Image (cartoon, rainbow, N blue to C red; front, side, top):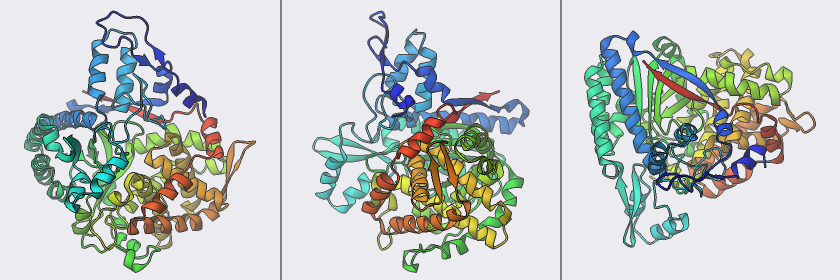
Length: 550
């Protein structure tokens, strides 16, 4: 166990307090300041004074919308987060400021860096299902319940846009707009107000449709409009998307919000990649019958700067890209959009990846790690999220429902490994200069070593899958004395190509047993990876944005 994890296991009872102190008798981790220091603070300044009046009003309204989505997410992430936040706000303890900050970084009192979700305030651990399910509901109970019900009950319980509640002896799915009616209506009205301020006709239409969809939890139409947006100066994703926070069934989508300024010139420059996606999909190394059949072929790529984030986009590590939406119906009909956050991507390389690589890789390999190479790694990863199937071949069941709690890790691993297929394709076709191959693979390893420190988070499990397989196949090796990895850059491609094939087949066939073997076996923490984590324990695990709105 690392020194950091050892510290996480210790709790300190707050000193004697007046009886009316809302935190009296509660426990708090004694190393709170040290935990906060694991995230390097980085200012993200949004100066609305420099914007035209219409843009300034638009941006301020969308920031308020992000904050509202954040309030919904707190209720989804845990059952008691709001109560503990209110208790901390009401205390006069000297720890108040640090507690509020760390509550914000975790959207509740459970530490996302702890492999068991242990509390840093109070006692206990986060229920696997968070606030999406009754706190006492176990996976075995819900599976036994569904086994005795008709298929439509399973479809409702496994639906992404609802919480599960007990009703006497029954389990019922409550749509988000019914579970959080006041907040959802406030969010919808903010989007409608923002639409009135937007000078971009397509963005206006999207915001208004999104507002309407929030009131029904049917996001198909607004998702399509978002994919089809043409050159908006600002962009926004808001609503339920990713299922990482659902550790029970792996199906419930959490509210997130990301406000972005679009770099139109850079986005247009990358359109060359869009025309190749169909060819890449056709060349995937799996049997033809396992390849998806879709009519939607749009794969727009957008380069942005993050302006503000809320909800599921706040806790833990800061993502630097995404491929959305996740709805397989949208993928089939219009495709999906890849968004890369250039300001956050550059910060990740500078704050975490390069320092980790310099510590854990041989000097000549570490020197190859760069912003440019890592940008390609992330770009191809996001393109790869759109490859393969979203529904199990021969059925209408979603892949994430079939794979359950292991889906997120398998999907992230698939995108990483298929990103290698994309890179090799673009080098072969002359779209990218093949002289950057070594830098790409060095940055791939550096990024994976950075990710494993998030323990049981999906990207961390995916990174361990890659690293462990590369070790098993002789592409990398850990030098215990030097506490560094030796890397055979030429050996990486064939290993990761075979890895991609296995992951694509797991998803296409909905093979839950093999997904479990990959996530829990190949994705296990080994002594070598533990030693690597210890060797970089003083390097920030990530950065935390400090949003400054003027």
